[in-house]
Image (cartoon, rainbow, N blue to C red; front, side, top):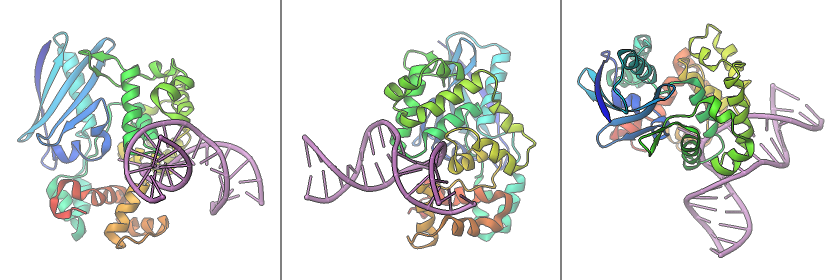
Length: 302
DNA sequence: GCGTCCAGGTCTACC
DNA sequence: GGTAGACCTGGACGC
């Protein structure tokens, strides 16, 4: 086993842990985390046949990345890994406009000063979409079970116990029956197979979503074309491609909103939408950060 | 131990 | 465009 240590320099408005633990992704393999030490781990595919394990931790104005690999890594492979991790941590995106917008609203001033706003994403859109479908209509425990099963059954192995996220080809080569029986994906199985087949065949280019010039509502419609991706899933996928116009309401955030703004009383979704409308193109991000503020700040425990 | 409900929803058919 | 019903699964809950 070879160990390589790399460093990623970070901008001033960046907070590593608030990014790593910005939503549930850190808890789904091949990500894992340790909240006591504030470390994020990830198994990454460098190229065909090369899988590595990375351990990330903030050190001042940089992130220290400790990489374990079977063979020594080439310069190109190191650069590719850094590029993947920067994309996961959203370091190639500019949040200064968002933090400026936050300063305009007294209730959100804490966002800029705490370096919040970046939401962890997977190295590929394919992984983000597959996982998002696995979060629908089930408990978080079942989401974890489905994703863990996908990774362990189809992902390339690293060091016996770890696995990378599976390729579209690997899942496409399976069957709906297998996904139902072994992955426990239930009725989502045909959606996952169809998605993997379309991506593997090249008929669907999910990765273009991150650089798309389409107007936000058009991109949203395009996401909705994927079977299993409804308003909740598309709304949250939008955040992972850098667009924050949608709230992505689900039963968990609705309950949070009721507690925070309505003393536990339920309201219609349209009422929640109306509440955040004045926050413009950043409303989805303001909303999510407000709902999860207590994750990072004991003063806001619910 | 067993039945019911519901969870970080979506799809389809029907009106 | 709006809505009812079906859909996998596993854990929590009541009995």
